Length: 470
Image (tube, rainbow, N blue to C red; front, side, top):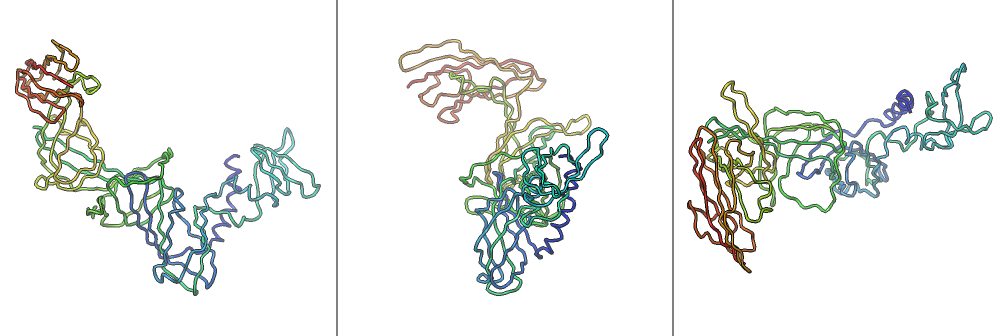
């Protein structure tokens, strides 16, 4: 149907719905706890009025992606005053198809387009069917059945509102109250379609030995509801759920930067971490909202490392044929950090000395990181430090292999660089370094590391021989 048709159908009906709904229950208090994996727990308190005995109550403005089986009702003011006998979740909301479906066997008026020189005509009758793109109407005067294509209809007029038609997702309860009066009620439920993640920014200094570190929370609300002046909590951690995740709808998203004071306060919560916003905030539907998570930490010491990995089993170092640039720093109190860092993306910037503007130099994702732990960011590959490696000798037997590897590091920069060369061993072997041109360090059971210092605009070559047995 055309937009003009739909609007004419909706105009009178929505006005009737609004008028029939009456005054909503007052005194709403909303709180929402949001989890990393695209779901949240909504807690809402409302003052609700009950008659003594059975009541049919509508609880509107719930999330479209609510899990109805998770709803928990509690009468806060008097736990024994109200009990829920039945619950229905109504989500077949007002639209052209739902209106027509409910108008079967009810009177309608159609303004049908004319053809040629004839003008439009008014058809009044009873709607007997709405199938696909056709409407079947029985004429009030003649009793004839007219099959009318929706494309030929200019306007549809509906005389009354179906009683079960809703404009918003609604919980409908059959409730029993022991006495008439107003009660403070709390409803708790889970919903999908709302999640959060942490986004961090790290700004390197000119010497690349310190950085400024800050973090933001990004909340993405596609749950089908807005949360006005809500108390917001975030749970960071790997909470187990057995409900399969559904893909998020592709929708238009607006970005909102929340700059008010009173940020998040962290505390341990069971085996997770709970972050509570120190003020209330509104999360609109289909909105991406950002709120500062941590105060910026200034001058955090950082160690930049250039790492090149090799292995006789090439699949162990797949896509690692260049020298990687990594940044390592500690999440310590004395560095202005020392706080639990939720998993998220870290974007790294550095100022251009020519004009002082920040330029993006790489990014990496971190997992949930406890305080006093070390972070390592792989932000990109070196341009002017070029590695070349090859096996110069090899002997194999039934249960061993001995090989000699040569690694040439060419530093085309005007400053000296240190490159760490890691030989990665297969997990099923025993290994020894028979000889090497430089000292080595055993990082773990499967990694041997060599430190190669390369002067400016120079070349250094590392050679070592490894025996692996199994």
